[in-house]
Image 1 (cartoon, protein in one colour):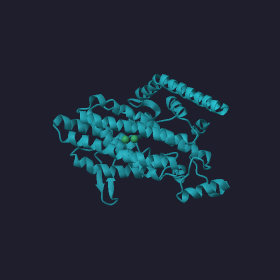
Image 2 (cartoon, protein in one colour):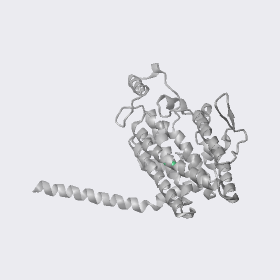
Image 3 (cartoon, protein in one colour):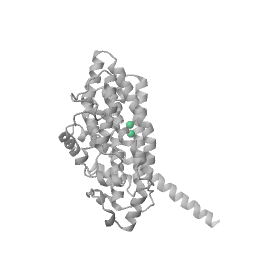
Length: 336
Ligand SMILES: [Fe+2]
Ligand SMILES: [Fe+2]
């Protein structure tokens, strides 16, 4: 039912006079910092906006396993393999929490999956870039999980209860992910010449796509105003991107690597780094499905869904048998 609502554009913010009494009470609860829970009344557009955001977030966790899963069998040591395996499993868990949070809004996991497969829902554009070397696994943990934390920490205070609570757990695990990525980068950056080159090359390729993870500039972001009024989103895209650059620039220096952005420099006046925006044309092209790995990623998800059909069928048949047995047992007990 909410699938149709999802395709609509809902960027406008209603003024208080245009709100119904119910909407005014709802907005007042959000303004007072109260959490909205699944059984509470909520505007259809709030529900739809949350389904889109949580659904896309869930898809990103699941699709995000693919570029890293690619390296589990090729991790350089047993220890690194165990760490990476744990990290990729965490991402599966994040996807599950988020699908479960979305389900409380009245959309099933199957519906969300179908929308992903039909291209009606997206996942983070970063996962359409390939992981070419082991250093990329370091850069992904350091930069991609680092950007994810920056986006997700404020979401622990988002207005929808189940989403906010899922974020608390997820953020704890994300900081482990970021540290393991940075640990790989340290190893590579302090290694031999070839390893240093791999670390630099990974940073060169991942830097701008990481900046894209905060979304387009606020002035071009269609849903920002309304989602901020509803506290589905807490900070602007540009603000978080700046925070990420400010946090990451000294880490690049610490690794003795060079940022691929020549304009990156400390600005005393604004107490932050100046930097070059990523190429937004590239961002929108990747979003439209024309990134280096879009087809491969979606193809892998569709294949996994189809290959897993027999497992889902088997589980459903088992559940039906169990339910029938419980009913039969209940009837017998009633007879006695
Ligand atoms: Fe995650
Ligand atoms: Fe992560």
